[in-house]
Length: 382
Length: 92
Image (cartoon, rainbow over all chains, first blue to last red; front, top):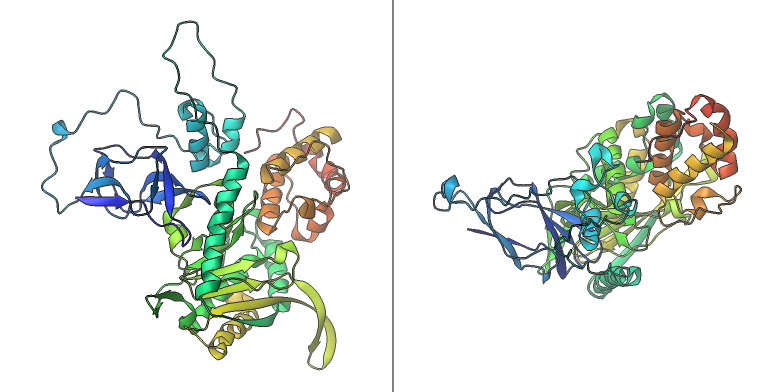
């Protein structure tokens, strides 16, 4: 019997609330399939199953908040005694499982308002129900015949509480980081002339849906540069550095109601530029609207934070433990630049590295930033 | 599509990108990206929505002309002349 436990979805998570189960006892579950929707202080997350099996017993019900590590459900897996024949599995209730596609935020809101998702029109991709679809719903109509009284919906948590929980989660992680990690900082000016020119030329001939954002080029360059400096790609745990064989870039996304979350782009060095661009925009959108997956919140091997759109020229960040480095990207600006003895305007941006001095030294850290700059001089090869 | 219909559509699209913003009395000359805190992913979403609802493809070179609501109206009105005036499908 496999115990499916509340996962730790980020260094600052202590507990999570079960919002909705996607599977019922008796349902088969494949590895990576979304099994339950969970709400943390920072986000509503779709949690993937870590194993293949059959859901046996659900132990934590929707609405319950439990510490990380609590057994949420049990699964029967292949090594168990032969699975009981179908006749012995409890018959499903007449009411169909709400296998309706909906974002975790929408599910949570629907349960607060006692709304049946099956009655709501979804305006998202593939008919997926999003939070705003619920806000467009009229109040449920009361029929003449007395129906069983509907469950009293719990009042939605006041916005201030949710924001406060988010801030407390961030406070815990950032304080721990500064307490435990001896940070050193480096900065380097990236020459973005060739990259900006190449981007303008390629986007002018690409269809709209295939346009590339500069952010994708910067992330790809970071991922490829990280291959050259493996001591920046991994985790500090139990007093030692554990390098990661794979490169999963955490992308720091500011949330519209305040707060920060950094889901990962997995194997960022392996993806083509087009694929990375598509996945990046999808990730940022889901980070803001709900629908991040648990693996995206636990996998980052290095995080990139970009405040360039916010208008600052450089960002000196705080490493997200247990990672050992964080890359900061500032605003793209036009500055005087000397090219072959002549002065000309050039598009540049300041890239910074915050790194854990236990795992790396300044010389090696500097190689990451100079490698990024070098790779950005040949954008067509990214 | 009338100017007012276009204006309403643009506010609806922007409201989707920035749901917490109060767009009810939005001045035409307020810088959109700064005031609504739109980053490059948000703005690209806005451009995609313009294509979806108006059939207009805005080249990157023209992005700067969409800095305010007034700029958007001036740029899009002639291009959106062919778009349906019976109202767009709900903004998804």
